[in-house]
Length: 428
Image (cartoon, rainbow, N blue to C red; front, side, top):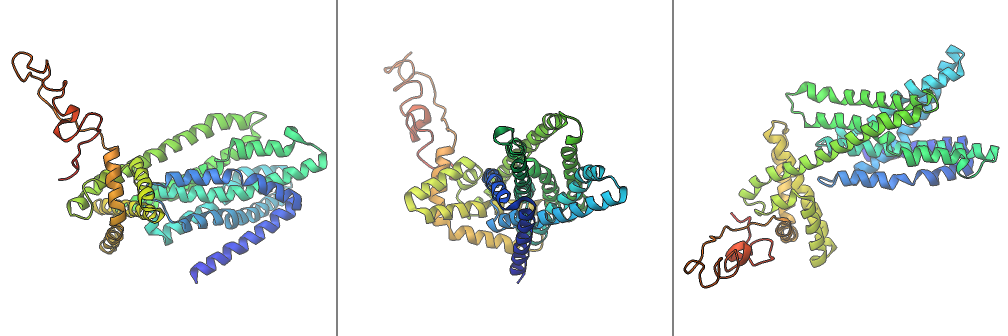
């Protein structure tokens, strides 16, 4: 019933927002705006899914986030912004001032709050899927992508209607200028704002029960930062002819670079957590000694999936993908438990994850062991460099066969050109 009610609510919001946008832009403008606005969506979704590859969240969370941003948040923003702007214009008898105030003050508060609601709902009702900063970044980014999609339809459709009235065509048209600014130059603007809110919720997700300040303060702090950045971006149009480009170059691009570095660094840190936490389960016999190393490397994971698909088909590759996701969740669960952040469901959740791993071990273990051998660094074996017979021996200055002895650079268990010993280097 909960899923049905939520789906019905989002569908109703979608129908209402489509009707409002079509009324504003006209049918032809709506279709043009729709066709142009959809272009950046696959790229942004793919970027957020790439960030989420360490512990991929379920698709239903992403679908909900996108639908909330495109339907519910967009509807709330259009209704609330219009009402507030009209009220300010009536109260002050200054329509132009009301528009500026609405764009720089009202819109950032309303829109960021509406988008943050999706992050809050996933945080509260899908807590098991919300385990860290990257989860917050992905949920917030996908929500903002949906919101920007609907907003771009409105702006591009309105610009097309303006061109129809003035007769402008080509690159000098309002549609072309709007497309360049919103789709080419700054498709990441809305995701960049809302990601700050997602980071706040992600920090709260990592906090333990004793860290009350860390649990309660980051989400509103991230929301305030998102509102502030959004207000600066909207207000750049009032800073003169080159105000927009000045804010874009001096503020937006550096902020985008810093946040990109932060989320990539967080992803590498999560991989390190996998490598540090899973050896305990390998020592207990749940995993092979090679698996923690392979599961802590995105390259090894990719090799394992390809190996399983090539030798056992798509079903085996899917089992490897699921095995990697469950193992990552297990590592994060143990990490939270060691830091005092595990809840009362720690033991049943751990047992559940171990069961999921065990049921997929036949397909996953050969692939992961193969990937570990491929990705593992060389393990050279030290060989004495003194002669075998006499001063230089029967076989020259380095013994029987070259400077590394009889069996090449890797000793008796390998051969020249073989990047790892023939035996399993991870076997304890």
